Image: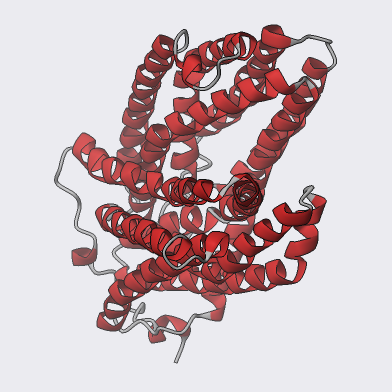
Amino acid sequence: MTAAERDGASGEPDAADSPRDPRPVHRQILSLAVPALGALVAEPLFLLADTAIIGRLGTEPLAGAALGITVMQTVVGLMIFLAYSTTPAVARFLGAGRLAKALAAGRDGVWLALLLGMVLALAGAAFGPELLRAMGAEGAVHEYAWAYLLWSLPGLPAMLLVFAAVGTLRGLQDTKTPLVVAAVGFTGNAVLNLSLVHPLDLGVAGAALGTSIAQWGMAVAYLVMLAPRLRARGVALAPDPMGLRSSFAVGGWMFLRTLALRAAIFATVLVATDLGPEVLAAHQVAFVVFSTMAFALDALAIAAQALIGREMGGARKEEARRMTRLMILWSLGFGMVTGTLVAAAAPWAPALFTPDEQVAAGITAALLVLAAAQPLAGFVFILDGVLMGAGDVPYLALAGLVNLGIYLPALWWAAQQGRTGTTAILWLWLAFAVVFMGGRALTLGLRIRTETWMRLGETR
């Protein structure tokens, strides 16, 4: 029996598996984007809850946990490709009327996530203490940092499994279920952490353990939902080696793209650090605002992944074009709205973060640049989602490397001008907004004008 036959994927496409959505395009977009926005906020809330609860333990526990959280955030951020590569794969098969193949693609993504999570957890257990020392952790701070990281590692396979399961449901055009699971998971995480840290006196380790338990609860919930769907379509629960290989290949390109983005962000932080504590403080606040605004824009990009993947699979080229044009307009409009909000807040919001007038002035300058660049960011985010949905990830990865290669010299030049204070943070954010985000807009915009990315049918 072939893998396709084992997974119930042989035979002709079943049109009933992917009926054409009769709703207007704008309603299809909103039905995916709005719940996706809520689910996107959940993961930062997990870490925010940990930070708030641990903060009651004192300065050294909080400092140590901050290092452990930083390691986990970095790893989890690099692994986000597990969701972003699974969504278009599933959506494409769904659009082609191959529900069994869509479910098999999701299953293989989940297995890949589980295997990667186990490898990374073992690597963290082996090398975590030395990594934390390399980050500057010493004495009690190192002890607390290792306690947090050690008890977070059991939950890492579950976190990655959740990414792939969420990607599967998004590909099946369902973003409401991940929202519900995330809300329940966040509530359970907060209750567990409060109980384990304080009444049971497990300290930093208790916060990490509570998060790990909550993540496994979410993972099990997704498995309980997906397993009956697989069985109903005759899809085996065990992975298909060829499917795993395909998921790994696509995920590799997506990882490279994510790595380029993370490298650009990390390099910006290094330059801000070199420019002085006032510049670094202002940059940190501005970047938090940028990340927050990105939630709204990324929700649209997630809708684009699911919808464009479905239309590509169904070989509906003109519909995909029409959706892309509409979503570009929406992204520009959302960018104008978020930009207006940031600009309005720029003069007074810094007072919420610092009493230092110099740092506040730097925050205001960075926020004004950020506000002006929001429509550009919306354009970049949506085209990222469209090309992901179309499976054009090799181009996204290579374009990311090109943009990084252009940005790093510009960033170095900005760092060498001897500017300080508000002027320094202004030039730093101009480099990020104009050179890096502008470069991304140019490379993605040129690609979307062609038809090279529009590969129709169930295979990418």
